[in-house]
Image (tube, rainbow, N blue to C red; front, top):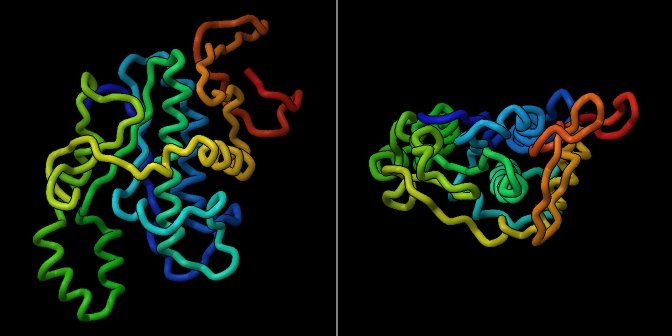
Length: 256
């Protein structure tokens, strides 16, 4: 592993029934999407001037292509589909990475990339298999595991073993082997929908509203901006991104 990396990998996967986080969110939405949005916003400024640093958001190559996108994300209201909620959270992470990279490209030393582990032998994959019927478990053990499942350590390679000199902002990294499920890291493609800037802005607004974490400087479509931090006297203090704030600060406005 090289360089300074903010890796967002914590996940909730395929909840059996609708539950709520302490903040009242559907758990896959709250953990996989909103938690990562908030964490990145609160730590990003520390990385902006660090050459070679990067924000790495972990998605899922296959699941992110399933379940049509709903506006802006499923929240657990109405009929609950845990698989669709998980897919939406993973697809949202790809959209977030694209939008963040556009912002960082206007002057920061950091980049934003996404990754996926392929088929990794983790506690989440083992648990989801154990909850299936006896026939499905037999097929997984006899066919799927030998062909498509690699160790958890190998699954971490696309996230952790990206050479700093060759990683490009906005790229998506995953295994290079059969069905993108195993093998050495390489760049992989994402569906066109994840590059939809209007959907990205809608997702950003949704995430800001629910978390209270804001990125005050926004990039307009097709434009780049000099992003400025301000010192305690209000004067510009160099290129960067203003610190995200929660609503209700002393002045009610974005704080430096």
